[in-house]
Structure formats: C-alpha cells, structure tokens
Amino acid sequence: MAYFPSVRVVVMLCLSFFTTTVWTLNLVPKTGKTLSIPLSHNADVPRHGPTDYLRTLKKYNIDVPEGLQHVVDTHKAAISNKLVAGEPGSTAPAAAHDGDLLWLTPVSIGDPPQQLYLDLDTGSSDTWIFSTDTDKAEVAGQTLWDPSKSSSAQKIQNCSWSIIYGDFSTSQGICYKDTLILGNLSIPNMTIESATSVSTMFTESANMSGLVGLAWPSIAQMLPPQKTLLDLLPDVLSQPLFTVDLRHNSSEGSFNFGYVDDTLHTSDIKYIDVNISDGYWAVQQTGFSIGGSDVKYEFSEARDIIIDTGSTLFFAPEEAVKTYFDSVPGANYSYTDYGWVIPCNSTPPDFVYELGDTKGNRIAGSVPGAYFVYAHSTNELCYAGLQSLSTFSDMPSIFGDVFLKSGFAVFDIANKRFGMAPKPVNTNNDK
Image 1 (cartoon, rainbow, N blue to C red):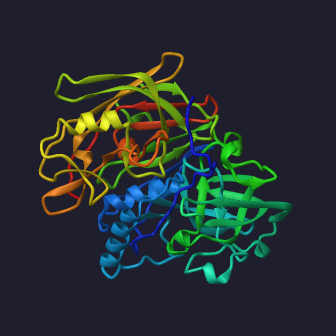
Image 2: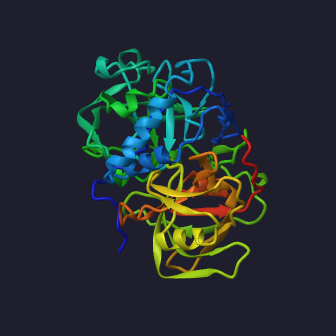
C-alpha cells in the first residue's frame, strides 16, 4: 500500500530565503482554448542544495533537523545583502523566482480583472491568494486582490480553509466565487481562497501573491469542499491536459495548457496511469540502471513516486541513490550539508530510470549526470541534484524539477495518466 503524509496538505513552500530578481516571461495564447507559458532561467540567483532539501521536507510535513535549519539560516544571512529585490506588480508578464526554484505567472481575477503573480504547483490543490482580507501585519509588498472591486466576486457563506505546513505554521481564510483568467483562458465560478492569515514563509516573498494548485481535488483544504482548478480546467481546454517542458540552464521551456506541442519532443510519448487516491500525480518506479555500466537494478516491489513541479531536487529511493553514488569517484554523504556531494569537476554517469503502472505500461528514460552537479558546497565539492528522503522519512520519493528537465512531461487530467518523452537536453552547467 502506498504511504503518503498523514497531514493531507501539500503545497509549494515558497520559502523566500533570498531576495530575488524578476525575469520576464511571455504568455502566448494559441488558437482556441489553449495557452502557452514560456519560462526563463534566472542565472543571477545561486542555488543552495540544503535550502532546496529543506523546502521539500517542510512541504511534505517531514521533521526538519535543527542542524539543517541552522545551515540554511546561516546561508540566508550570508547572502541576504547580496541580492536585489524584484519590483512587485511590475509590467513584466511573469517572473522566474529563486533561480528556477519557483515559477510565477500572471493570473487575473474578477471583473474588472485584477492581476496577481501566482505560483503554479502540481503538489497542491488550493488556489489561495493575498487579498484585502489578509492581516495587514502579514503583508510585505505583495499585490492584493480586492474582492470589493470585483463585480463578479461572491463570498461563499460558511466556507473556510486552513493549510498546515511542516513547521506547524498555517495559512487560512475565507472563500469566494469569481472568474479566474489565465492568459486567454477564462474560468468562471472558480473558488478563490482569500487569505486572512498567512504563514511567514510566504510573507517573505514580495513578488508572489499566492498559489495555483494543479494537484487532484482530494487534498484541497476548503470546508465544505469546493471545486478546484483541476475540476474546472477540462471545461475550458481544447484537450484536458497540460504539459511541462523545463530546461536546464536555459531561457527556453514552457507550461502549455490544452494541447501537446509535438515539436518539443523527439519520439512518441509513453503513458502510465497515475494513482490519485492521495491527491498526487503518483506513479511507480520499477527499476534503474547506471549509464555506461553493467549496473541494472529491479526493485522487488515497485517504489511509489510523486511527480512534483513544486520540488526542485530529484529524490529517488535510497538503494538507487546509494548504488548510483558508489559509481561516482569522490562522492560521499556530507553530514555538514545533509546530503550527497560530488566533485564539481566530475562527469557523473546518467541515471536511467523505469516507471510503470499495474497494467504493465512502462516509461524508460535517463537523467543526464551533469544535472547532478547542482550547487557548490565548497570550491571542490558540489551538492548533488540527486538525493534521498529516507534519512528523515519513509514517504514516497519525489521526482522534482531536476528529473522533469530530462524530458517532455504530460499531465493528462481526463485519462488520469502521466506521459513522458525524450527531448533535446542541454548538459552545459555554465549558467
């Protein structure tokens, strides 16, 4: 039986450990009910492996070791005066935030439309925003939605929401019905969760005014239950799906809604069923191998995997991670960094994976080893983009953006399946 966190709350913990520089994106409407959101790489913000690990632990309600928190706090203090904050509410159509760790997109709400910058996250179902209902002491530069200025906003009586995070802080509020506009897509009667109180982890991010959840409705935190974006998207899209094309150190890539752009992949898309019983885009890993070697490993039982655009690192099963790093000269587990580190000048082998479902469908692909030379720990050693959660938890593995950058991904809402296809990849680690 699959194991998932007991607290059925999974949202992107947009921990703004850095003040950030906004980079622009463009929303490109297509013919009909489709939308393309190009992405842009933010090379000015340095990655920090322990910080990215911490985000995932908190996101999935896993206890954070005091030592790891200290490492992250020390790093935050060291760089806090070196980065320049972006301008919230600027005319830029969208923003790359925290060095590709979080993608913001402009979303308009109401009549007349009020534009906010929100995070698209497949790890949460709630669409919640900063608003004029939010405690003023918890607003730090975010653009606010004002329901009183929308002629189409209707408060839902006796509806509330509350989201608990891994550090036991909360965001909570009330509910409205209003029109949500994403590019040329207009979604009437969308449930807008208006925050009355917001966790401090979000108040630190002035450019971001909330989240748009793209996970399944069962983990939404509204009471009584209301329809979520995934409930409503099929009614407004030409095809009830969206695709994710993230790129490594590149100013290309996109989130596309309602269509599959066949120019973005090089061979057929392979699909496997997803297990949505716990609200996630969850699949199974059946085995792995190491590129350029005879090492091939089949799990005695398939391992549960969550495909999550809202997590940065690639968290694989422990036996896969240890076996992989045994093949990388100089790799070792750092108790200082709380993760695996490898020589920065190394050329690690590719990680070859196999995903599957109970029907026997399979997806095979590889993640370039270059993606695992992730962030400097010292001048010689780099924090690896491949890690394991098993040191702190027995929950499923999380295949985040490091994994997603290796292929073209399809999130098929109507058929409840996940697709993947090869694409041209960049293995250059120069930013």
